[in-house]
Image 1: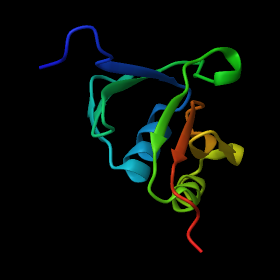
Image 2 (image 1 turned 90 degrees about the horizontal axis):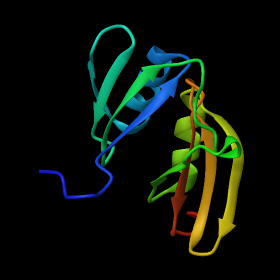
Image 3 (image 1 turned 180 degrees about the vertical axis):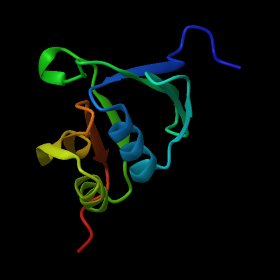
Image 4 (image 1 turned 90 degrees about the vertical axis):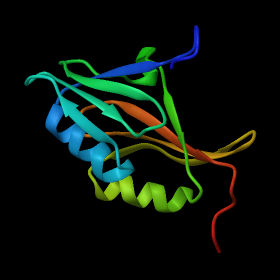
Length: 121
């Protein structure tokens, strides 16, 4: 049961719905349920949500919300998303509390991954 007045669901626009779906499925293990040709719902990302076909996508530089995932191994996460077709738009950088990087998934949405762990030697 969702908690009152908490974020419960999120939707992303995607320029390439099938590419976004494949990316998130392979990168993070999200599971999808299709609702027609222009919408797919996901679960398994710590939050339920969906992807809808759109000519626009979310980018932080344009005022879009930035979704930030956590990783135990930031370098391994960067390698994985790069191998699956993500474009790294901000390489790993430090910030108060840890390190992170930003990437754009194949459907055009910018996300970030952060870690409070130091790089593995």
